[in-house]
Image (tube, helix red, strand yellow):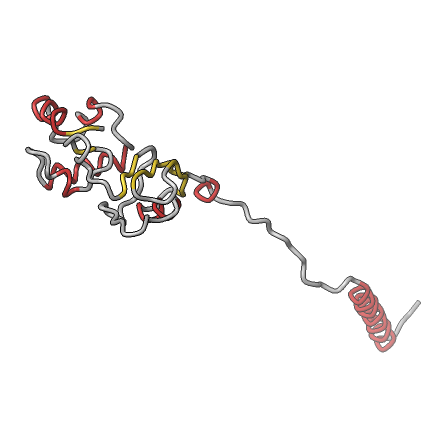
Length: 179
């Protein structure tokens, strides 16, 4: 078969148009891209799944004295509210903004040293700790920092873990403080 150049060009163009038409037809048959509906479930982080609570014993001049459970980071004022609030004409006598420690007892409206003339190392404020002979602002801050980091003192041997407390001061604290 002897084809002229014009015939070859026409044939190539026809084939190219045919293939192009097939590609266009195939492309049009494809499903149109649509938004993919992806549902992502929120997976809580470790911090969100940890639900740490503190349990404290609220006593004294509150409407419902007793044990209350509050979220970690709660303050004394939150514990008072959880115990029904202050009784009429009662003054708290404690630092309302202090962060609670798990397992502590909070005496509301009662002098810390009124019962035994001893200051409770687990609940006393810095100024109350400074009332103990031999305890100044620095040591009071260390006692509070130790409490906040390690929890309440369970024995006087725990108090020995506070920086600056040695055997002599520990014996002195036993005479003037309670846990």
